[in-house]
Image (cartoon, rainbow, N blue to C red; front, side):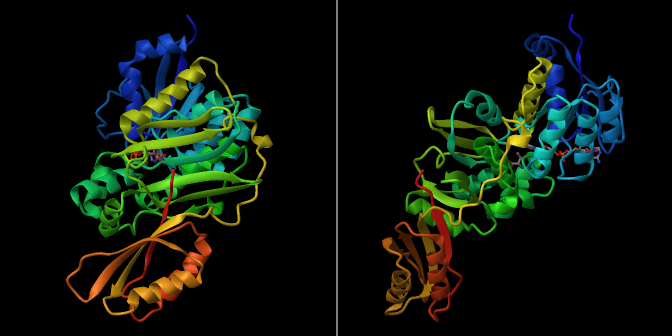
Length: 428
Ligand code: NDP
Ligand code: HSE
């Protein structure tokens, strides 16, 4: 019998207890697929006494996750504590320095320090895997690093935050208030410890940065991306977008523009009938465009205990089988920085204004857009009771910079009653 793969598990929250459950429920199946038993030998969390709903009695305990990573009876460390630096990073560094394999769900750490950690893993010929860090249960890192490795990738598109998609779809379906739905997402274990990372677009941007780094073979830093969250998406915009045939999604796009890379994560309107427009609840979707394969669409649960633990255990089984690949699909030293594209690709935009309902007002708005060379595709004044009229405009394709200039002019008009709203429309 081949020796078991011995795991140290750091973190016993939503994802960590999920890993315990899968390895306990499927011990036989995992051993059969891995070709050897896979056993948890020790665990770590902050509170030893908390009842976590799983039986931990057979495992050793370490208060300090770094001590866990250094245990001589641990071959592989699973880190599901979270946090960009602090104990998570120290645990990763200790594990890799000690020649142990390392599996993590931590996109914050991987987006910031992933390439350095990959270099450390490669130097020790051990595996560093992070499938669970991107799109929950969807095996997209594996798809990019293995199945699609023969393609040049031109574009990665994704709905990559389950919490945001859950909030946006429940707001649309039930007119439910934002704060109430966010609370439900937290209760269900979808949200980050600090949910502002979800609704602020940061969590999804970290995931897109990881995918883009693999896809383009170039480090993509968060600072080089346009990142906007869903906090300012109003129920009114969700409803107006639906009337116009669209859905609002927190959408990530990373694409090559010549030698440069453009990456953005922001709320966008997408056609209601498109696969992304139809995504409900916590579901994520990733679209990958390869030069030989064409378009690949992957979809599935993007957060929560079961899907995330499923991705972790998939990585663990690959390691138990002896698979050690460069974490980013090619040696870390070969990842060469690319310039940032100077501007986002032109797009149509959805605009919403609240304007005084008086003669000549629409003409002044249209003139400001016209002076910026922005052409109107559709325009509608929404039914209203009072002296102020909501006005919706869909533009033809335009660059963002002249649009912002025109919106600044319109915001300064005495007839403009609140800051204009502009949301990009992705044709997909
Ligand atoms: P939780 O907050 O539910 O769990 C975190 C766990 O880490 C807790 O058990 C906590 O201990 C433990 N922990 C925190 N700090 C320390 C420390 N210093 N030493 C030892 N243990 C510590 O988080 P999740 O399970 O939701 O998320 C974990 C990771 O997985 C994060 O990186 C997250 O981004 C990622 N992830 C989460 C997904 C999800 O759907 N929840 C999906 C994909 C990725 P204690 O319980 O005692 O407080
Ligand atoms: N908070 C994240 C989300 C967890 O909602 O998508 C999965 O990475």
